[in-house]
Structure formats: structure tokens, C-alpha cells
Image (cartoon, rainbow, N blue to C red; front, side, top):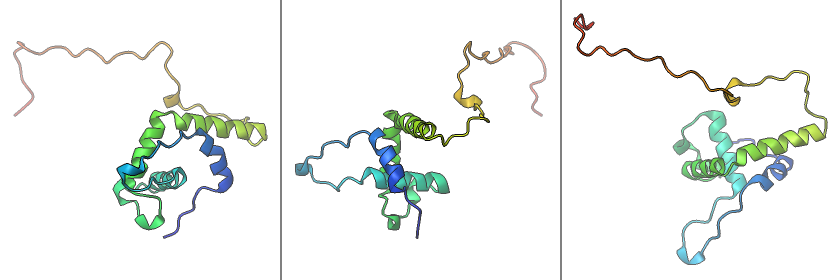
Length: 135
């Protein structure tokens, strides 16, 4: 099974945004930590194919699906994805590689400044005689 992995030049841009791996105490034993680059390849494979995390093929060498999922969650909690996005955007702008004539703002990413209206109030029906809609 063959999957395109992250190219070296892209990895060099992403790696500085990742948190340092935790110190490993060799006295505790356990498996060696999967490298961040392999874990990122596994994450991208799962997200691009839509397969369940537990179905990540071991033959690809990206680590287990659980490892990749935990790394994704940890990086999300650490704000890595926003930092990576900003770094790549800055690189594109610095090299005049981003076409700015046509921009689209995704409404799901823009906060409502005054807030959205709450849900409509549901009238109480307790104590009201009438049909209950079941037959």
C-alpha cells in the first residue's frame, strides 16, 4: 500500500509549530515514541480517506490509529493547527504565492459579534386538555 507522505520542504515549515516531545524515562519501558512526522502522515491519511482511526493500516508505518488520534488531539489542545495555518499563510504571502483577488469568508469561522438569538420558547402544555397527537 502506497501513500504520498509530507514532502521535506513542507515538513520543515510545519515542524517548528509542533510542541517538543515529552521526555522518555527508559526505566519505564514501553514502545518507542512514533515520530511526529510519521504521526502527521497517519493523521492526514485517516482524514483524507475517511477510514476509522482503528483501521489505519500498520503497513504504512505511521503508527497505530490510536497513537495518531491521540497526537491529533494533543496538537489541537496545544493550538498547533492555528499556528501551522498562520505559518503557511505567511510563507505564501511572503513569496507572493497567494491570490488575494477572490476571498471567501467561511461563516462557521467568524464569530457573531452580538450573539445569535436563543431558541424560541416552547409553550408548556401541562394541564391543557386536548388531543395528544397519538392514536
